[in-house]
Image (cartoon, rainbow, N blue to C red):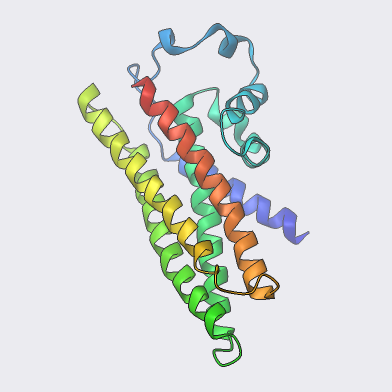
Length: 210
C-alpha cells in the first residue's frame, strides 16, 4: 500500500510539471525529424525503444512507462518527464539522508557519518540543479541559437547533478563495505544516479535535434 501511494505521488508530481509546460512550437516538432519507426510505434513502445539508448534501459522503462501517454512520442516531452522523475527521486533521497544525519551516531561511525553529511550537501546541490533544468525545459523558446544556449544550460546542470550524486557514493569509499549505513545510502543513491543518467541521455539526444 505504501509503495502504491508513493508511485501515485510520483506520477502526480510529474504530470503536474507537464501541465505547466507550454505546447512545443512547430520548430521543436519538425516532422522531418520523426523517423518512420517512430510513426508505427505506440506510446509504450516508444518509451521502450528510447530507453534502449540509455545506460540503464530497464530502470528507464519502468520509471517512465507510466507517462507514455503524456510523452506522446515527443523527445522534448520525454526529456522533461525524465528530468521530473529524476527530481522527485533526488528530493526523496535528500530528505532520507537528512533524516539519517540527524539520527547518526558520530562517535560510533565517524567516517560513515562524515560521508553521510557530505552526501546530504551534494544531494541538496543536485536537487537545485535538476530543478533549474526542469524550469529551463518548461520555458524553451526563441531562435535556434537561443534554444541551443538554453539546452546547453540544461546539459551543464544535469551533468553537474550527476557528478554530485557520484560524489555522494564516492565519499563512502573509506567506509567498510559491510557497514549497513554505507550499503543503504549507496544503494539508494545508485538508483537516483540511474534515472539522472537516463534523463541526461534524453536531454543530449533532444539537444542534438535542435
